[in-house]
Amino acid sequence: MFLFDLLKTAQAAGVLLRAHPLRIMSRLRLLKLLYIADRESLRETRRPITGDHAIAMQHGPVLSETGDLIKEEHVRAAEWGEYFQNVGCDVQVRQDPGTGRLSRYEIEKLQEVVRRFEYQDDWTVAETTHQYPEWERNNPGDSSRPIPFEHILEAVGRKKDIRAIKEEARALAAMDGLLGAK
Image (cartoon, rainbow, N blue to C red; front, side, top):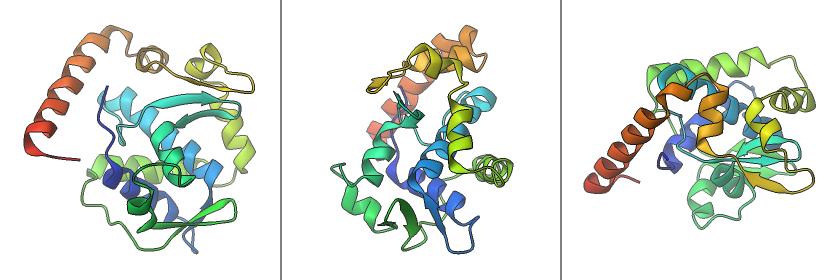
């Protein structure tokens, strides 16, 4: 529905990573916190932060393109790599991507999510996402499966707004296309 914004996603990841003194976090934790923040933003503002689409995986939902960027399997992985590097199973800031594309709300949402899960280990954070109705509905077992945008909207209490949100997303995508935004 929404257009994936690599720079905005990198900035969102940067906000989460800045919460750690060494600016490092496990891939699993980073993907889960970004998903949770996107999901809550949809509930609260009718828009995600990243514009990425979700997939259900064995250990819960994740943002698809973001996961591919982190695994260095995305066509734009080099661009992501300007900001982040993989260190084993962790992601570490290489160069701060800033926050210029993020709204004050988005920065505060990301900071709030990282604080909420600060004292939980990575697997507890992952288990939290297993309770989300959209993951349960699309549980892929040992595989992966796209999570329809409508399932997320229904799960966060936005079922009645699905049509309007889709129209908004199309209008934003058209505007981005005209302005040449990426």
